[in-house]
Every structure is written in structure tokens, then in C-alpha cells.
Image (tube, rainbow, N blue to C red):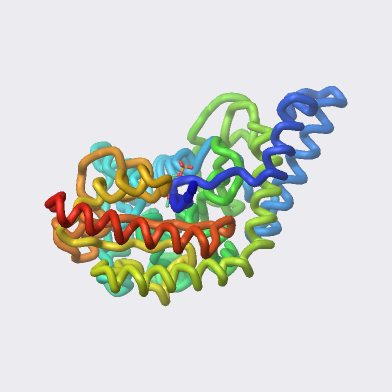
Length: 382
Ligand code: PLP
């Protein structure tokens, strides 16, 4: 059996989306910036894609920009705002559980003289709102907080955070990393009231290589990638038209499929119950998280041993965020949530999509039980 439970790392491209991408690669391939008829046709298709994405996100088409991945979108939001607003201040607020695209960008900015305050979370991974409010100062130019955590699935109260920021300092910009929200919850820009937001198509059954940025009209920001006048001179470089057009369809399907995530949530609750019986600690707050994600800790067992033993059975889960799971550093997010180093080292992440079913869950649970018994018996502990 082949069981893919690593959908927070990436998702399989939807078949209809892949067909559409193929068409725009081999037949309708003109450069959307060319002024001939063929180019105009593709430009129109790309603008239709922008409009559809804007409609789904509750934004205006002119507030949507295409990049190459969410890491680029996040880099642009943070660096672009800092560069354009440093005269108003050099202080940034974020959280200790952000994705490395945010954390490492902030680390670099610290080297450039910006000061960064990282807000801590409670044991369920929710940022401390009181600490956040107190952290916002006169010279705070940006707050960047994620909508849903990639490792635990924990939902952050981004609507409330938006309110707190604007009431404390109306000049502070708010960026939301909403990568793990799309296709899992009905995310709306208007409700969150942020100034910028970042998305990635490969997390919602679109192709890799397409990032989406929401940028509120009128905010002060510099382009990140200079070049031609594409994307209203905010992001030089010929657009990935095939990927963009496919991503718009993927986003539409992601919103259309939201109802089905209730079934996935029920499977997740079922798994959580069985795993708790096996001695696993459920680190995901089931009542405040995206419906597909389950982070569990098997104290005293090495997570990488579990992942590789399951992989031998055709089951694919992950130890921590995909980008860092090949490094041996312990799980930064779990650790800061208050779990011990030893517990963090026994953390695996199970992340489903609407393509998964109960039969796969049963197979996974059966194999997991065997794997845990084997590893405990063979002292594969930490
Ligand atoms: N932000 C979050 C929360 C993520 O989970 C990821 C990917 O794992 C990213 C940002 C980066 O996305 P991309 O792979 O498109 O650069």
C-alpha cells in the first residue's frame, strides 16, 4: 500500500490542474508581456486567474501578485516593508513558531540593525496576545504572524491580532503567512484585515513554483526582485503563466472542497484517539487547528526511526517541517511550546488531504503499532 500523509510538506497536483498546466506549457505558451495577439490571449488568461484568486481570498485583483514560492513572498513582505519604512522605525514583531522562511529572514535583518521581538506561545502553540500587544512600540514597522502552524496545525487568532496591532499602532504593517490555511479553513483577507499575506500553490494541490502575495493597495513597500515591469513593477521576471493559471483552478477547488475536510477531521480525531492508546502525546490542539494535521510525540522513541520504519511500509509522514526535517536539529516549534528536548525529538507530523481515506488510516495505525513495538524492543530510544 502507498499512504501519503505528508500533505503539509507538499500535495499531489490535482489531475485537472495538471492537465491545464500542461496545456499552457505546450500549446498556450506565449509570454503574457508580448504585445502580439498570442501574448494578449495568455495575458488575459493570467489576469482571469488573478481575478479568481482574488475572489476566493476576498481581495481585489490588483492586490494579488505572483512570485515563485511562499518563501519568496515572505521575503518580499518582510524585506520590502523594512526597506521602505526604516525611517519610521527598525523594530519587527513575530512569533517563535514561524516557518524558517520568516525566522531566517528576520535573523538576517537583525544583522542589518533591525531589532526583532519573537512572541512566545502557550503549550498548544497559540501566541500570547498580551505579550504581543506589549511588544508593539512606536517604532514597530511590521508584525508577521502565521495563520496556521505547519508542524502542529495550530490556528493563530489572526483576526484578533490584526485588531490589536491597528489599535496599538496604526502605522504598523501586518503580514500573515497563510500558507497552511488554504484548502483547510475558509481563509478571508478582509476578515483578517492584514496588509500583506503569503500563499503557496503546492500546498493546495497546485504546482510547485507558484507563490501568491496579497498586498493591500497603497502600502509602502519596495520590490524584492528588480527587473522588468511585470507584476506592476513589483516583481520583475516573466510570470509562470502555466503554473499561475493552474494554481487559480487549484485554489477554486480547494475552497470548493472545504466541506470534505470535515471527513478528514473525523479521521484525524479517530487517529488521535488510537495513538493516545499507544502512548502517544497529542501535541496538536484538536479543537483549534487545521483539520488535516496531527502532531504526536512518542517520548523515548526517535522520530526519524519511526519515519524511516513507516517509510519501509509505504507510509510517508514527517518529523518536522519539510524544509528542515533532514537536519538533525530538534523540533524548534515543539520545544518552544514547552515540550522537553527529549519529547521534541520523538515528534512526528501526520498531515492528510481530502484524497485520503479510512482504509489508509487503518493501515497506518496497524503499521505504527508494529513499528513502535519493534523500536521499543530494539531500544531505538533517545
Ligand atoms: N510558510 C509555511 C507555514 C510553510 O509551511 C511553508 C512550507 O513548508 C512555507 C512558508 C514556504 O513555502 P514554499 O515552499 O512555497 O516556499
